[in-house]
Length: 405
Image (cartoon, rainbow, N blue to C red; front, side, top):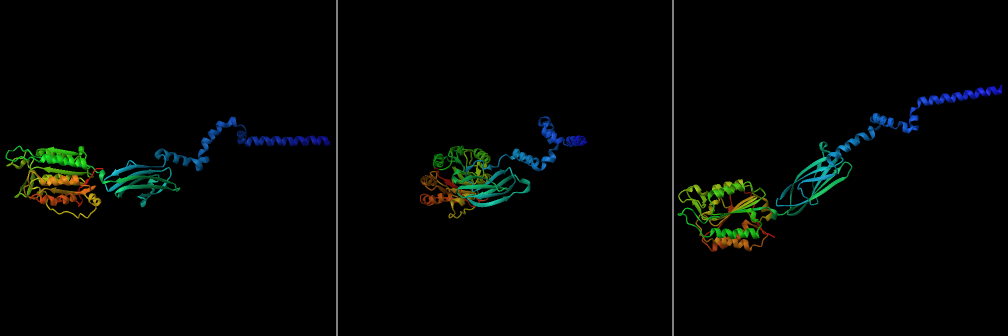
């Protein structure tokens, strides 16, 4: 009996274990998957794909999209310079506008700008341009080298830095010259001259060899007609720029009409009794007004050349060359007042002599005039004139002759 009871007890225990095992199999399909990796690898991929939103969104999905989007749009952290496009340039302008685009893989917080090691200003980054900032900032330069640094700071505190060097050098300015010499006239009643072309040749040589006038920027008109002169001035409107300098030299006959209070240059096709081909000072000053140069200097070696001035007020020579160059100017140096001058010009002799002997690197037109004025007066009956051509854009600066290296 005891043996029979033990037998039934064993059967009862065995049935419980079997039932429990069946129950576990029915309720634990995941356990079977973990145990049979090869059979369930593909279903796992499908499950991960179908359940990614719930399982991975808080951890990786959104950041990965944002990083990929920023990377494809802006790439690595960088500062792309637009102006200047090179990391080192020369300029003759006292003010220069720097332009750059800063891009970052993370949000930017602030951009600091420095000029020559000194804090200049900062730009607080707005919400609309968190990872890309445009910088457009004008700078007042000092003569010589100027260093401009940009420092962009991200929200994590990392920095994106770069710099450019801008050398403010007056000698990098472009100098144009228009040289006009008239000595042969079509009208036999107008006396031919013998010296203007010879004088102009020497003037051409001195400015192209000792000063910063390149030969390709010098236009030389020998015995031109009125249309030649007007056509050349008109053409120069499309060549000379606001940062350039222009020197106009004229040697030839001049005439002053007392009744009309107007002075004239006489081109080669001028007629004594018909002023249609005379070149009035008003035409010249009209062109000086539209030629938006930095500085324009007129040198006139002609009878009645002083008629170009409406006033002869000069400026204070105590100013530095940098200040004189910074302000636009329209000045003139003439061989005389409203009187006739001789064919053999004492004026041009001393003008060329002073330009040839000069050892000052930056020579203003007023300094040039002052150095020759007394000599001309002591050796001729004429009184040379220097002053401002009025109503054509002069702001008190001066034309500066720059010696070549």
